[in-house]
Length: 148
Image 1: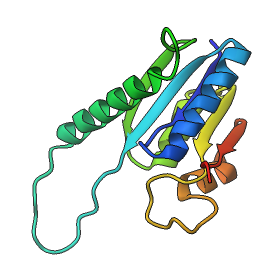
Image 2: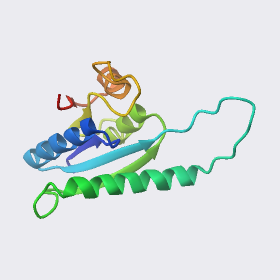
Image 3: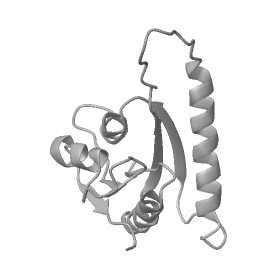
């Protein structure tokens, strides 16, 4: 099955990437795999606070569900192709790459990400995820800029 992978993090740039991924998927006759990856929180200091990773995954699923519901409103009659929501945990770049290349020799027709996500360094031209994928992804990559 043909598929296009897109990363979604709730940023305007990732929404632009989603719309571009949808156009590409329709043109290619493919489905869209919308990936949201939840970061493992950094633990700093001597205090130990128990974390429920399942709660983080549930929050990630809710975020992606809400984001896709909002995006679907901009398409009259619903998405023009199948959209598969995918929630993962870990480094976003690695998780997007794993979704794009699930098996040796098999890969997405295209991976689409925004140039900047929700990270803290807004002055950079490329975010850490788009830079990581540009260097490591063995599939085609489209990096979409934010509307300036």
